[in-house]
Image 1 (cartoon, rainbow, N blue to C red):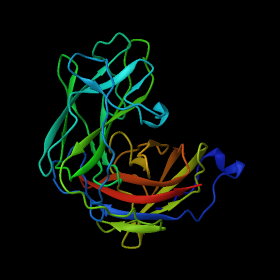
Image 2: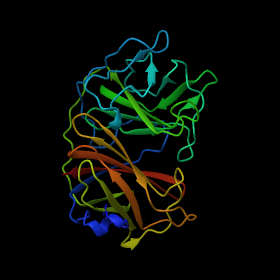
Image 3: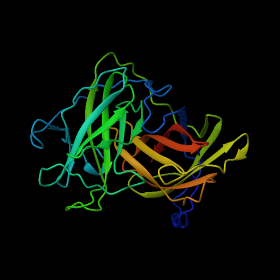
Length: 306
């Protein structure tokens, strides 16, 4: 991928070419039920889930010790909590993960604002940053959500719920809360791929330019081509031409890079701009999702942040 700035930030000299990025390619339809993890990304982890008292009867909060709610690594923030009975999920088969979001009054939240065409975005990632899934759960009348996950490989996983309350004290505020779950079995560790400049996915060449710095806002630009020509037939996906999500190596801190390119029919591309705010230095595993011809493509990349 090639990230070039189209933002006024460029005038402050925040963009520099030459970011080292590697893209390990996979297909992962949003909400897909395919059971395999991403190619080259089957490495294990050893983090364990923990809980704290409170929340709904019979449901446990995820671990919050030493975690910063600003990067999604907390089960609770500002009175809102991600609660679930599930601490373990089976390996090798599709499964539904059920959870609720409770508000400051301890009751299930049932009113959510629409963000990028959905009221809830749900992510799953193994602690080694493999097996990425991005799905959209369904909510029952009592506020219970069910996220249908594709088959998971053994290891420690973190699941994230991204939402915006449509009422109450948190109305209009974006939240990302998470919990850890264990998938039993032997986990095969795989190293995080080293950074590189570009790669191909499903015949498309993805290039990136930009030099993000931890804790600072930076523009990033993704360029997509095919057969040596710029791609201009990107279709809208979640009200944008591409969805970019990142997870930090070591703790799986979460980041959603917000798109800046406006949607204008089924002819997006080749350049897509993003607003990047990555909280921590080090390597981030990025997942770019874009759609052409009704087919969703997912490219994985390692981005080093200074």
